[in-house]
Image 1 (tube, helix red, strand yellow):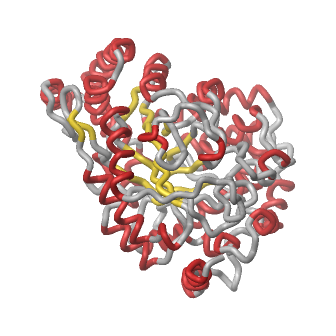
Image 2 (cartoon, rainbow, N blue to C red):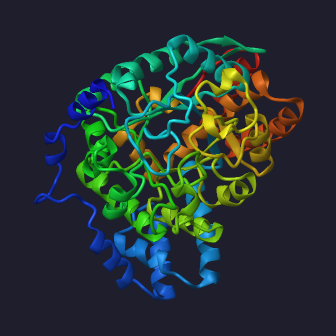
Length: 496
């Protein structure tokens, strides 16, 4: 390890930016309490489960005991009702919209040594690289100008060469790209980031350049497992520095934060409870503003990371479906992200039970979009993918399932974040407003990027959506028709 890396590790963590959030010296994850809750809520009766379901449909965050009761449910007939309810909750809050995005990996340089990740420091076989700004521009031109993405999740390893200043430069570069398309132009309108925990000062820098959601996964909430899979002489080995990174983001003004766990490192029931405690902690500290999204990736094969082959906590498809439904009921207002780790068959089954976002045309190697390699090259990427289908194929399938793909990012640029967005989500108003923008951005995408087959399916869906708007939002109907006509004529980024 070089002296610059050692200095980076020693200087990154600000202990006072951990201690300020502790209560009596403790963090908000109490392992013993979580297991006591799970044990105490065994064998819940039907009437209690139905009361919990009613509370969730009223868009109220569940308590840990209520989440634990769902975790313990054995009645398969009730599970079918829960799956159905999860879909209804999603439609109540978000309507039938599905947001799509792509990951853009900028750097796999990393000072950490996570036992489940092929980018870890000790993997000397990896092809280590950090993209420069010209390379990032080329990646973005493919994503925005050829595929048609409007949103990215931009991913970075934790390393002095991919610090906050580098991240800020990459975001500015991504936003600067503007590519001519068939009828309009392609651009990235929202760049979310998946990056290491940072100080309040560094997060303030990122706020200024307009990052979207700040996504950090705890990976596992179980303290002992966290120590085992994250060596203690590394930055990521500090459990609490990671646990409170969203608190620091909120203080820095980055008021859209995203949480998640890597299912397969520890017992899935514990991790679901950890996500719930994390949600409640954020709501308590930040005026009822919980996570903007929750992710639940499953452990997948990664090169030179043997834990990915031998974990005893791998989650079955049946349990995966249950945990997704439990999260949807437990945090009914949150966005839920299903990633391309999952194969197409699983994605088709899981999307109807509460999913709001998914990626497509996904490549997770450094420079993978402009290098144009099609096969999964395990040595070049962080883990194996289950679904590498094109955005065009995914959009068409979603339309055939009755979902409109939304490329809208207007709400964020109009200030509908933090407390504002939470209020709209919890009362159901956001779904109506965003439906209008979904129609316009879907029309944009069909005209600029869709294959003829997808365009045919998409335009049939658009006709249905516009008719529904006439019925449900008559006050907005005429303006929608005006914007729709202008979009058809080549104008872009019109929104309500």
